[in-house]
Length: 241
Image 1 (tube, rainbow, N blue to C red):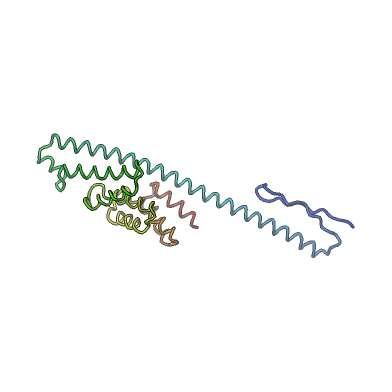
Image 2 (cartoon, rainbow, N blue to C red):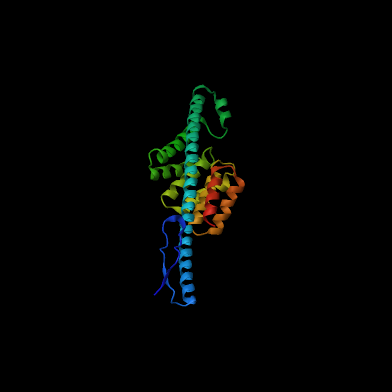
């Protein structure tokens, strides 16, 4: 019985190759066509699976790039904040040592020098507990205390942000959401507002509130197009399509 060696089909990616199939010429043309169609379907299925795998890897790569940029941005922000805090402490010490009562009053009409120093120390202490000592529970208590004692101070917006971040890390999603929302609504000029919006978008995304998450990410891109937060928002939007 004569046999015809069919051509092997190459699978996408070069990882596998279809072995040649021997087709019995005694079969009818319809049967041979059916056999070839089955091989084509199998090839297409493998190609689709490979493409899906490639798309998944690309999505993961985009997420990693976004996280890297986020961590770099946050590190720079923290270093900048630390420098500002030390400068603020130096200024307050100088004010205590050389300023007259009238001059001290001119620094801040609503806060005397001792209170201002206490405010800075409390915030700085809470920040060190979180970032340096990794004592998150204590840091949460200190930031909450700070917001009670100094609800409208220089660092209130940042305190809301770090408190929200710590609560999110501890799994208290709703409490964290409240802190981020207060920052966004009450401090429109805060440097942390864009990051807080991204956090709210992620909370909505994780809660399967896709439409809300997309709306928040688009707001970040529109309001802060040149910030790292906008790049993160773009990456998240791309992964949701």
